[in-house]
Image (cartoon, rainbow, N blue to C red; front, side, top):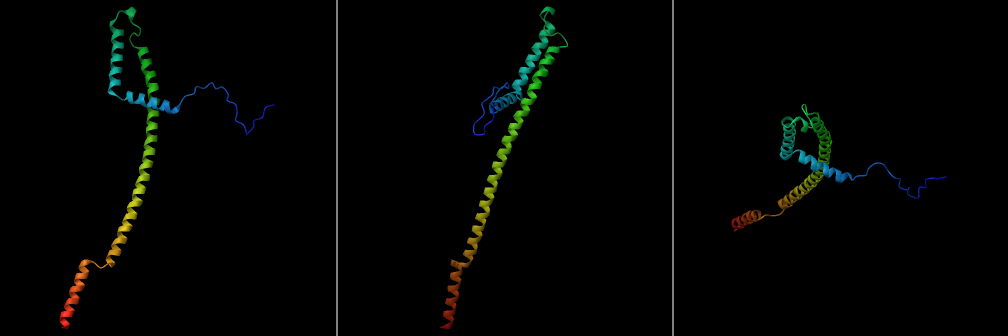
Amino acid sequence: MTTDRLDQPRALRPSLRPHYDPETFGRLSERIARFLGTARFLVYMTVFVSVWVIWNVVVPPNLKFDPYPFIFLTLMLSLQASYAAPLILLAQNRQSDRDRIQYEADREAAERNQAEIEYLTREIAGLRLALSEVATRDYLRAELSRLLEELTERR
């Protein structure tokens, strides 16, 4: 009789599913998606399809492996497209995740900057108020000039 004990980990069972690292697979899919979006890929595909078509049109019938209407070429291009689309979507999802994380970091930095600016604004306003109560050089000169005038008038 076997009972699952909660104080002990379960024994690992063999799995028929293949194990893969999602991060490594994601990086690989991004590299493939980046390559699929280049002019180099378009040139390679154009050359490949051109050679395929020219070969199957020009060579003698016994050497043709995919005669017109090029069903095998269509099948290969469909297979390539069926793999490319999910890889591109996976790469876009990973990029949107990175963009979301960057957006959050930028938003937090902007909030910190805003708080610092508000603090400094309050400090400057406080200093201005404190300085308005402090006697300035011009104020002292004006007061001394007024007192000097009063003294000269009294004499």
